[in-house]
Length: 231
Image (tube, rainbow, N blue to C red; front, side):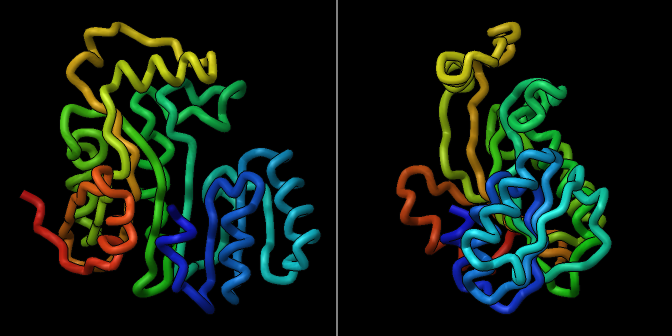
């Protein structure tokens, strides 16, 4: 999704948070962007460096070890991330997957820190997931005041919606690392996969767009520039 949404972004300074194998950074570099890719995992950093060399892009993709923005000392036109968003502990064993109890802790850290690393009219795209009773609970309730204070324009594209318990059971079956807490806490909740698009220094407005009925809507809706004010 990220590579498709940002396909027209060219000649930009790009930062990728949590690069993993470096695939997204390589895609961005192919479009004449200069990319800084960071990851908290030393193994991921080594792999991404090797992939950049093997693909002849080491001159356009720099890879460094960093816990989010810890070792970043520059500003960028575009920041992209597909951070850990599984609802499990962010401990050492599962740091590559754990997004905290609701799956949004890493995403919130990125959102509340990224403004200091953006050039004027810089954009942020984050692919993530989270739990809530409705679309606004998993992200907007906690960050609503922050968005208004920082005058962030926000689009949230809902890519998937599933019953929370069904999603947790699926993850436990597939990965074997999900311990389902008190089931009654999740009985009325849903799991949402989403794409967040942020533009700082805007007007503090937002729009939530359901795309999960027709995934082809994502590319069309990603071009929307109209926002709605927070209630």
